[in-house]
Image 1: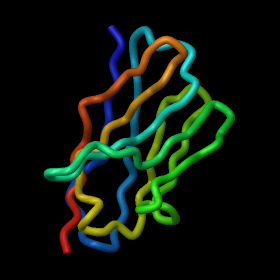
Image 2 (image 1 turned 90 degrees about the vertical axis):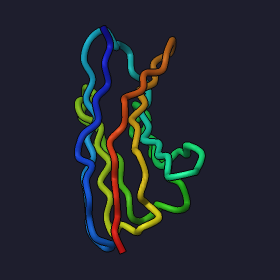
Image 3 (image 1 turned 135 degrees about the horizontal axis):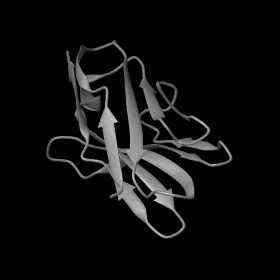
Length: 115
């Protein structure tokens, strides 16, 4: 059974850093891209960062210059380095893995930034 698991969330003060990791197991083959989404309290889920097989990255304007997405050669793990965190970054962060035939989501890891 395919499974995606995020880790690394927690409580941090404003200005601090966290590193989220996403690993997968089971029958997930041919990953072509990965992304980190987030959903804050009372907000819609939004794309924070993405990375392609070729290494191209893309970021939401709200995290540009503070977040960095990376991956190992076999997509284990897909990391999201988050620096200079702000209270508005508080959200449940989800990892999505994309193949040509399907998308796979994890259950999320909570990030809480205190002011």
